[in-house]
Length: 319
Image (cartoon, rainbow, N blue to C red; front, side, top):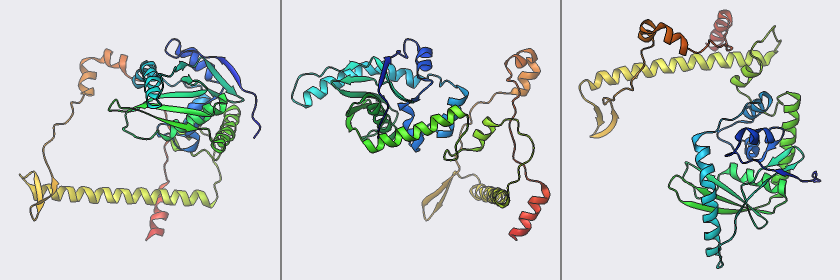
């Protein structure tokens, strides 16, 4: 595949000026989002990313993000020393990357370089012996944007164990990232969410908070309505049945905290201290001015409702 020419721009350190860092990357599809388009990011869906791009939402810096930024330099230096020792040579110099690399619509801000290889530093709450999929997608996109053929992912897990793995450039993966991210950015610029992006009700509500008129859905609409109400009714039935069983188990246990079968524990009903709660009603009565000061403004949403006659027809058809 023929790619555009690689461009390089001075990188802004997010620890120094996060606002400028975000502004610099905003027009592009960032390498760190590549996994999202392939369903490999457990924290963000493609629809979430599309809405953030279209609405210009800024992801707030979290404590975990700040912790990772502060640990980067120390982990990078450690990696340079350990890599040298494991390969029978002196410590390797790992230098901070100073540029953002742009390939058409795609942009990458790598962490470090070691000679011509990229070094990406990660911290994670997981305990893992292999790099997470979203990291691999990220460095593939970074290698594409920089022209590098190799990247090292170095990560610190929840036990403070530091590991690394080398990732070689994969042209097929890189081509898929480039094509899919291009289609995604085209959709962002057109403010149209394409059908291949799976969306949930919350995404549609965010896109169309004030709907108007009616839409003729055909048979598919009726199928969905029937399935929705059937599942909802079944869920209510099972919840009620489960509640009845729970009540009978408490009656069976009485003053005992454990139920056994042939001496083997099959259920427990032990006391548990509940979390403290805030008495909103009393606070509103005792401190009305303070209550109004801190009360959030009422918001609106969209609610799915099925007419009674349609519910009745669905239930009749299920009999």
